[in-house]
Image (tube, rainbow, N blue to C red; front, side):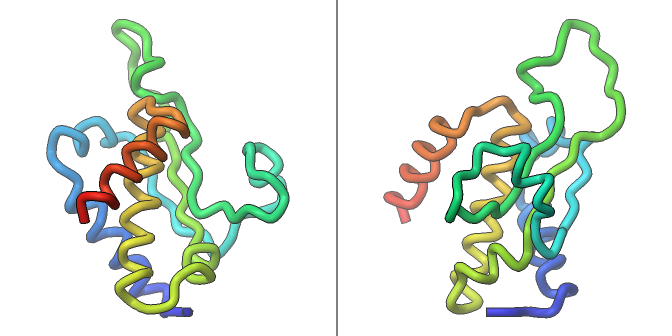
Length: 129
């Protein structure tokens, strides 16, 4: 499935806007970037295994690692990889859900959650649906 960039950007923007206030205040110094696909160098910096697809990436210092009195520096970065997400989506509803899941997953990393914790929370969320 492939949609225009402007529609994809709106999905990401709407997902970020729907983040509850308690979490949104924690991501005020985070730049959300939409990239068509991850660069090879980016993939090399991750724990992605051969054959896996990188859907999003958080780069920064998780809020749980901040020291007392730490001052915000340059923004952290959350990249959302459009082509990767589209390649796994069969229709608009699935694409919207996947964008939501990826954005929330990367925000979770920003808040200090590890991969296993996030996967467990995502599984719980999907069971409730």
